[in-house]
Figure 1 (cartoon, rainbow, N blue to C red):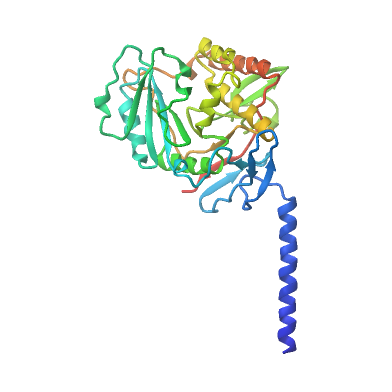
Figure 2 (cartoon, rainbow, N blue to C red; figure 1 turned 180 degrees about the vertical axis):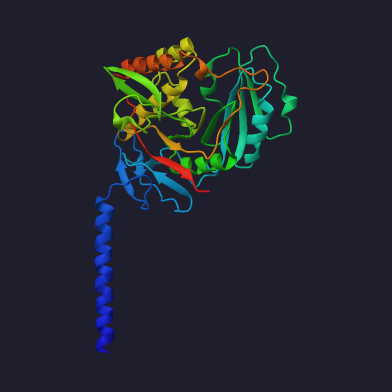
Amino acid sequence: MMGLKRRTRLLFIVALCTAIFTAYIVTTTRTSGSFALLRPLLHSKETGYQFVLCQQYQRNELSLSGSLKPHYCYNPWDSFSAHSNRTFTMIIQTYNRTDILPKVLTHYCGMVPTLKLIILVWNNVNVKPPTDLWRDLCPIKVLTQKRNKMRNRLQNFPEMEGKAILMMDDDILVPLPDVLFAFRVWQQFPHLIVGFYPRKHVEINGSYVYGTRESDSGTSFHKKVYSMILIGAAFFHREYLRMFNDEALVPRIVHDLIDAVENCDDIAMNTMVAHFLAKAAFPQCPGLFVRSQSRQVIENATKGRQGKWHDPSHKVTRSSCLNKLSNFYGGLPLHYSDIMLTPMT
C-alpha cells in the first residue's frame, strides 16, 4: 500500500512539474515558422483584430526552413469554418495567349470542386474571346476589358466567390497538388500573400534595388531572403482587392504609376499589405513562400507573347517603382523573411 501511495505521489509531482514547465514555454517561447499552440497573442486597439498563433502542421505534411521573425496568423474578416474559406476563386488575366490558354485552363480546372470559379480577365480589346475552346471545362466567367492594362486584374470583382483568391499568370503551370498545398497554407495565414515566386528589395547607397530571392545584391544577410511574393502565382484574401481600389488606402498616384509603366502592380500590392499589417499589428513580411516541386512557364508557344521579365529594362523599372512607393509611404514598409514551406512528397 505504501508503495502505491509513493508511486501515486511521484506521478502527481511529475505531472505538476510538467504542467508548470509547459505553462512557462507557452508564456515565453517565440516561434519559428508554424507553432503548435493556439492562443490569443495580440489585440489591436486600432483595428479590433484578434491575433492568434497558428496551428502546427503535421511533420509529414511539409518541410519548414527559415530562422527570421516568424509569421503569425489572424482572422480579421470571418470564421475559418465558413464554407467560403474552403473554396477559392481563381483570377487569370490574359492577353494574346489564345494558343496556350486552353491548356492552362484545362490544367487548373482539375481543382474542382475546391476551385469554385475562374475569372478570366480578357485584355484583348475588341477581340471576341473564343469561349468555345473552354466552354465545358469548369465554371469560367470571362470579363472583357475596355483597355489593356496590367492593373485590370486587381479590380474588386463582384463575381468573386469565397474569400480566397488565387491569382495566376496565363503562362504558368504549377502542379495541382502544390497549388492545393498552398491553399492549405493560406487558410492558416489568410493575412499574407502565399505564393511561389519570392522577390526582395535591397537598399544600396540610399536607393532600393529590386531582385530575386537568390540574387547577390546587398550584404550576406540578404542571401536567400525575400520581402515580396509575386501575385502572378499566389493566394491572398479578396479584401485586399477591395483595399487596393480604395483611394483612401491606395491613392490615385499609385494607380497612375502602375498604368504609366504597365508594371509594378504586384510590388504595389505587397507594399499595401505590408503597410496595412504594420498598422494593424506589427511590421512583418507581407508574404509567405511556398516552394513548388516543379513549375512550368509555357509562354514560348507558337504565337504567344513573351513576359515583361524578358525586357532588359524590367529590373530598372521595378527598382524605380520601389523608390517611388518608398517616397509615398515615407519609407518602404516591406520586411524580410527567410521562411520556406515545401510539401513533402
